[in-house]
Length: 172
Image (tube, rainbow, N blue to C red; front, side, top):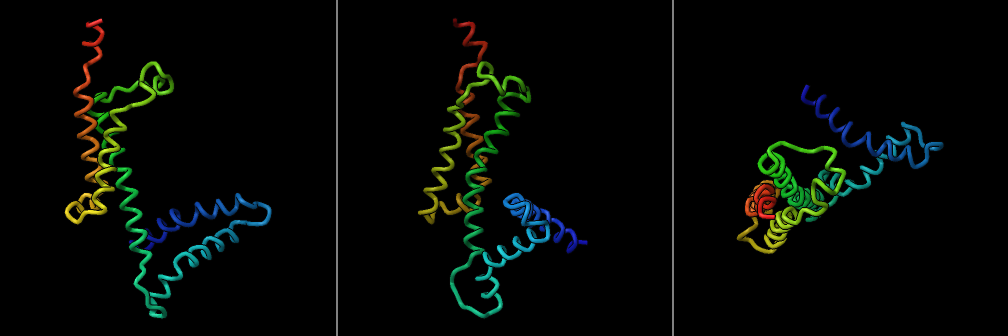
């Protein structure tokens, strides 16, 4: 069952989308079978180096698995602060009260949330700095977790320093 689940998950995640893309490029010439074959050929072309290396036919220090892992770490380091900011904003700042129609107007929510940009920029900057420092390599290695925690904390701190709307209105 585990093997079937793995194969079906990978089929849906890695074959269906590019197959549909190939079909949409030239629907008159590429049917589903041809699109699946093209997807397989592209996959083989992209990973041929790794396959030949694992078979022992070539010797190389280059590892595409390491390149992909590093790319995923870097990408998650960008998504982590966004997740932390969104969770803090929805659950702690807005207390799960959201004006759905107001999301599409400029009078309820501001068009630019500068606290969010700051809370996003600081963890991203630290992640970039940690790439060149062995002392802070842990910040990059756990990029999603460190980024989301730090982004959320900074955002909460900045928002808690902002005066509440009722105080601002009573001062006017």
